[in-house]
Length: 483
Image (cartoon, rainbow, N blue to C red):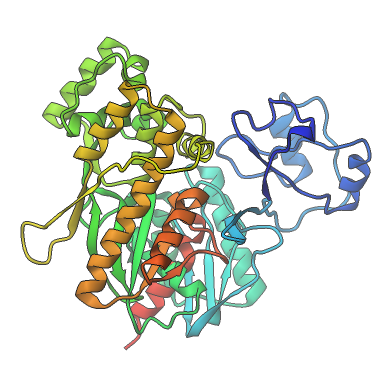
């Protein structure tokens, strides 16, 4: 459980630095109880970065020999490894961040029986899902499928689930991305067995997973608000700030964040300062040294970035809400580079929660009408960025700026939802995607939507992040095959 740190806890500042919350777990095995008699222990996962957890003695001895002072081994071999689950509390209930040990593979009940489907999730925080009749069995957390080791873990997990539940899939579902290793693995798996491979758009899968965990039959569309960092869009660009009118069979992109250039791919993700400069360039705000992300980058780096943006050289296009929050964090001086995924946005949420409550400033996000019939609305941030920069230059409390950024995002969700309701009479809004691990934004959005008369769906059984993606993929693929 991610819980608030108490001043009297006596924990070293080195434990979860720069955070007011810490992950707390109780001893769940006899050996843990014996070890904990000496007092609280600080745990970390038994793996190297980006690799699966070592679960055999031989593997641990080989991989950790030069890293640790000693190894305490057990005489009970592990048959099926499972990472620890991670939960937050939001709106008085559980919000899964990682659904693994203790939860998986306990099934999610589906609204109706479906064909046997294997879905392999995304690339980050991967889980797989196996459907049998009216039950979806999600695997424990596998990890980020970015190397051969995690790909092998994916293979082991699929084999274990098939054996455990006696299911042989008739369909295979994967993300539409042409480069995800999980999707490439799914293609090989399907081809070897003569099965049909169904590609599911990333954010449609997010919305479908939320609908499925709430037992919706899919006979009415919902407005899915899918905010995350990265997802391959149907137009070949990177989506992530999406409003989808969807059921299980289809979706319509009714609104999205205005696109911004992403320079350097993963380099931009690891350095939010580059994201901040991209947003400033997009709205014509000069890069002056009084802004933290500008100071963080040297003159040569800024020159190269400016050329990339002006010439659209080695840049991609993104509508990502996660990247926008990263840029806000950099602009407010929270963090210019990150060491783990989502770090800047996590610390930006923390900054906002420390703001004094009261009437804040309104940061405008403009809803731009489409140039042609049937095109989606765009959410433009020109005035938003100008107002934020003005407040920073006038010395306004960064905590208050961070809180008002969250309020602005919650407000624009309601604005779009009301526009869609006026056109379609859709009353149900679902909040999904990794950005809604942010409890502050989630709470603000739910409260404002409910005040506006909407029924609001949030995640309680599977994570809003890519850990729940496989469930949505499986349901979409099964429905696509229905007559």
